[in-house]
Amino acid sequence: MGFLGGYGQVLADSSVLGAFWVNITLTFWSAIIALVLGTAAAAMRISPFTSFRAVSTLFVNIFRDIPLTVVMVMMSLVVSMALGVQFSNDLNLDAYVLAVIGLGLYHSAFVAEALRSGVNTVPLGQAEAARAIGLTFSQSASLVVLPQAFRGAIAPLGNTLIALIKNTTVATAVGVAAQTSGLMKGMIEIHANYVFAIFMTFALGYVIIVIPVGLATTALSRRLAVKR
Amino acid sequence: MSAQAAAPHSVLFDAPGPKMRQTIGLVNLGGVIVILAVLVWAGWRLHAAGQLSAYRWNVVIEGDTWVYYLLPGLLHTLEAAAIAVVGAVIFGLVFGMGRLSQSAPIRLLSGAIVEFFRAVPVLLMMIFLWYFLPGIYSSLGWVHPPDPSFVAVVIALILYNGSVCADLIRTGVHNLPSGQGEAAAAIGLTPRQALSNVLVPQALLAMLPALIAQLVVALKDSALGQIIAYSELLNEAVLRGGIIRVLPSLVVAAAIFIIINYSLGKLGEYVGSRMRSRTSPLDPETAEDLPMNVTAKAAAIIIEPVDQDGYSQTGWRDEPWQDWRGDPLRSHLRIGPEKPHED
Picture 1 (cartoon, helix red, strand yellow):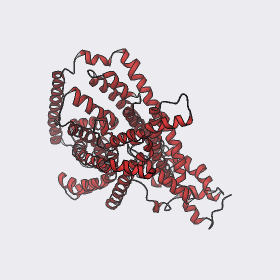
Picture 2 (cartoon, rainbow over the protein chains, first blue to last red; picture 1 turned 90 degrees about the vertical axis):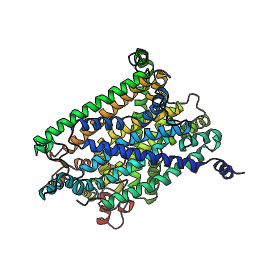
Picture 3 (cartoon, each protein chain N blue to C red; picture 1 turned 180 degrees about the vertical axis):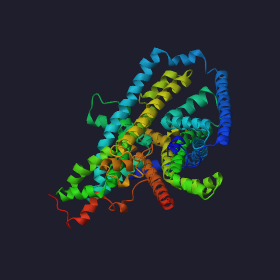
Picture 4 (cartoon, rainbow over the protein chains, first blue to last red; picture 1 turned 90 degrees about the horizontal axis):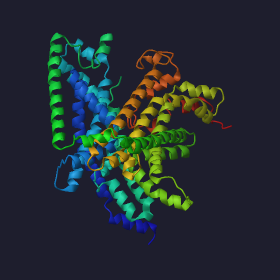
């Protein structure tokens, strides 16, 4: 059996596609948490209430400047072990939920920044013009400012999504073994002679996922960009 | 104009009147009460779990913690990030110029390498290198090889951040006014000379704020080294914390990371605003018609668009088929001789 045949057997014995599927579901659930928390943080950040702004600024600065690995190790060693927070009796599901919460918290800071930068792309003249034609605050916000803000936020939101897809590999720090980085490590340990082929398999998997997402979000942001 | 500066979110809100000021005061009071309630609740929960005991938190002020764990760990973190950023700039120069090369094969190869390393998660590269390097060491016959986890962290960081730098250099050169490439051609420089002597140096200077942002990314990603047993700050904090004192120990490590990264972020913002205002006191939006110097103009274009993970905010990347448009390097070819002559 040649190299290719031998490696084919290794691939057949391991569920590489299953591992990528775990990363995709991790991305999905943590993206939902990140969107909800990030939108709330962005809304607080642009509100006129000083206390809301202070809390949101603190939250965003903490989660933007802390390494993701620190967040994930804390979810595992502090939240789960030291504080005894348990989401499920099934250890694998428990680790999965912890990973989703950690990823969601970390990326919510970037979602908040993306949305805020979207608001910042709207020129002041737009709000002034809305006021000048007699629109109330809620009309001006919902009809003039926010639609433009969301369009301006698509490119940075797409970048956050790409970062999230790649960062789901850090779930290994919480103990989610069934995803790509865990499976790759396991495969390399068993089939050390195929270390390069195993890495290239997973790397190309990410290239196949990430590049279309990047092209799609770029195309979308260009299409929806407000012409100024 | 000064009223706008005082109210940072004036796009959505008018300057508050007396009634709104009263509402803001009431909401702030409520907000402070909620914050205090959450803090008291969290403190009480931590106390109930025994996490606030003096023995646990003494780990923060014990000399051994700092001398044998946190400071050596921090040193390893900074070492990996610093080497990685220097390597990333070199990698970025090589492949950024490769992507701007006149030769299509070099352009395609550099493009493929850059896109590949931008798409692959850094952790996968680290794990691969960690298992791959010992084999290389033994085949090279090294007696005292460097720590494979350190080398794996540094190389993985160089490959990812270097690819981001390559794109920064490319974007920076594209954003230079086309007159730069045309002037270089007019005085008889070859395209390669124009790139290395005229265009890239200006793009490099304009990249400075983005490079500082990239240093933050490298510092944060160096913590991935914990997973492959590199003795960086997070790893040392976990070791020092053990099972009992893991909460205070990790809180201190997180605080160190946050303080360093926040300061670097502020430094990047400062450098960016300095570069934008170097020749013009006006903001970049209106600076279009001012006699700004070229680097400041390019800086005004590049600084904003890069987020923390190094992706361009205005688009994931430039489309290859748009390369020639407004491109100082290729635009001079169109107005120059039919066949660019290589000396």
